[in-house]
Image 1: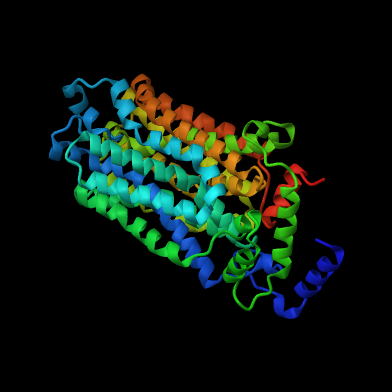
Image 2: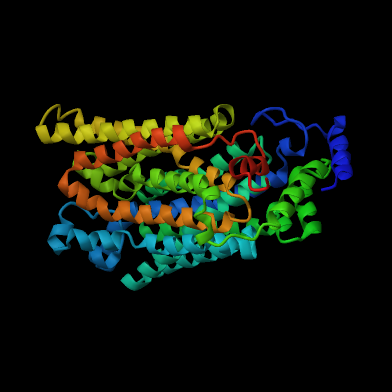
Length: 500
């Protein structure tokens, strides 16, 4: 942008009428980059939250649904292909090995990994909004396949379809939100929307404990229908439109998001200036990402994905019934006690993220995960030693609640927020795909190995997960950058110095 144009945009931004209040989500900055909440922004966040909720429901569906599927269809655990364990003794009665059970239990992650690998490039080629159309189609097809299933093959096909949609969601949802939201609202809005994943897991647990598996599949389709309807009314990402040179649509989308009476000239000029300069640099291929200038970003992105999964989330989520059974806790009681505290934790996290920043909240969240795993492991130690047997179920539930609340507070959503913020637009698609694929591979690895680890030592399993979280605190403190209160362009330039 020329000096004269920059001067004009700065003069416009300094006019009194262009000051926007942040509505409590962040500091009272001036200019369009510190805009307040608009109806279109809220609608866009709600629609994106529907995609995250749909993904979480996929993960949470299997635990309460499996016993009903086995009873109704007369399938073995291996044929059903569901991850949560059956009722006590059924695995041994069927002669199902741990390896067979673990392979079928992790089948959803195959679709997720495929979706993750193509998510970044697909969103770069057809746009964030159209990618959400595609993932929603796979969600709907998956739920319909499960609802109408009469045998194992259609159940598995449905799970693969759902996993593919979920894999796309994990990249495009936070990326879209980070690109449409002002800097003073970005952390809170994205955090709340992505926190719908653990919320919907809990909702699936609660509803699935009282209704049958086919009805639960239909309920899983409800957020998908809301997403389908809502996509008609939200704009495409302005930053993606700027990247592909659709200038008029870029300005229209940005104006729509910020409000018709808001002067967007400064923010629009900054985005266009940064995008034009970035496009002068050849778009890097995946192999080009492993250069020194991107090394820190990749280490942070991949490290956060590994930390999120190796903290033990899917050990809890996919096999919650088994954990309750080993601890002597009734499943319905356990699901209710575990699910309810997550809601206030998510609300608290969305408030604190812009006050204390991403790094601080991440360290608190991961420390809580470590404590939750330690309490869970300790309950198994006491159980094996036949000490304080009356207190073991309470200690077990306490450990799970501490873990789930801590996860909902930060580590569940903040890694996705940071990944959507730190990568420049010329590498965002390729880098996002790598990070997303690593996340799904780790998801598969945790779900596949969980039964082997539990068979070796239930207490040792959770102590291992807790140790990973402990190491994660050091990783966050040393390497993860703080992105609070800065535009995406400011964050990316400060980390890569790509335009210098």
